[in-house]
Image 1 (cartoon, rainbow, N blue to C red):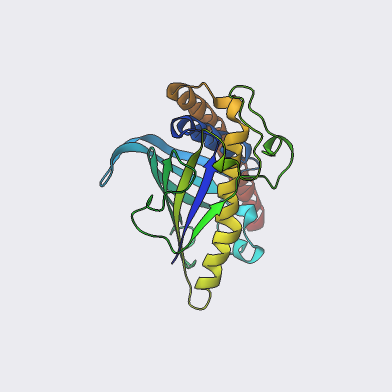
Image 2 (cartoon, rainbow, N blue to C red):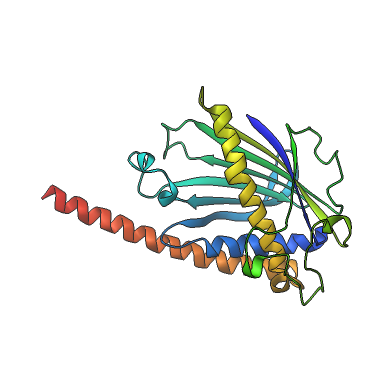
Length: 265
C-alpha cells in the first residue's frame, strides 16, 4: 500500500467550500456523463457511521468501459463500473473507491481510500491527520489549462477574488486548505509498487487538481447558495444523469439481445 498526503489551497473559506464542493461534484459528474458512461448515484442520504456518527452517505457507480485497456474489455461485462462509497461529516470526509467482485473477480485486489480535512489556513498544519503520511505534496492550484478554468486570469464578480498568482496562498485572504490522506493498494507481486506510484501520479493527483480548480472557477455559479439550494441542485442533476445512463444502458442491453438472437438462429 502506498500512502501520500496532498494539500490543496483555495481562495475560499471552509464554510463557503461546503457549498462549492457539492456544486462542483454534481456539475462535474453531470458533464462527464455521456455515451452510457459517467457517474450513477445509487444512494445519497443521511446515515450513521459506526465511528463518526451521523453524516451524509453516498454510493455511486462510475461507469468507464471505454476507458479500459482493450485486453481487459475482453473479460469484463459490456456495462462495467466501479463503486465509490463516501461519508461526509464536513469538514471531514471519507471516500472509498473499489471494484465490484462480481464484475471483476479475476482482477487483483485494488482499493483507494481518501480521508479529507478542510481547514482555514494556507496548508501549514503538519498535524491535520493523526497518522503521518508516507510523503506530503503541496499541489499548486495554478492552472495547466486555459479558458474559464485558467485561474491566472480568473476573477470572481461576486467576491472580487482573483486572479491567482504564484505565491498567492501566502498573501491572500481568505485561504483554506484541503488536506487529503490517500491510500492506494494494488496487490500484485512485482507490479505493486510501480502501479501504485503510477496511480498516484497520473490519476489521483490530476483528478484532485481538476476538481478543486473547477470549484474555484465556478465560484460565481454557487456563491450565495444555501445548503438547501445546493442539495436541490444536486438532486436535479443526479436524476438527469441517472436517467441518461439508464437509457443508454437499456439500449446496449437491447442491442446485445438482438445480436445474440441473430447468432442463435
